[in-house]
Image 1 (cartoon, rainbow, N blue to C red):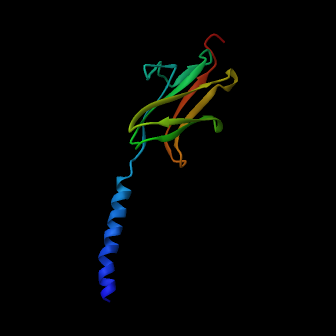
Image 2 (cartoon, rainbow, N blue to C red):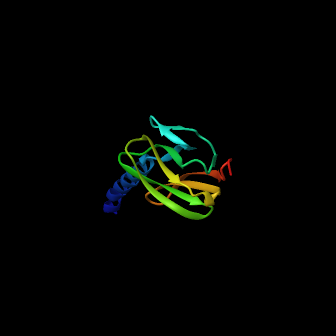
Image 3 (cartoon, rainbow, N blue to C red):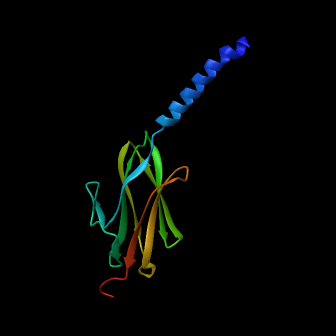
Length: 137
């Protein structure tokens, strides 16, 4: 019985430390996700949710918050439900801007989506845009 009385406080202490450590785990979020025509000085330009096929490529700009040190995220590009690309991006601090881009064929007009995904597969953001035939067509 004495051993149980001695071990019990130690167990409670370990459980409490474990709970605190779990709470202290950083929460990584996609604080900003913007589709645009380009990036200038690490900022999106030509932000929109609809683009025409005369545009050579569409950019997905993402601002990540809450990362602790080096982290990887992925931009997963979908046309409808078909995965078209998975781009690995490095995150270097708790407030980090990054982006990827995709050339889109004229025949791929319609709804597109980019999921922002952590290494463990957790989706922390998702946005959609529409790609339309060129105005000139």
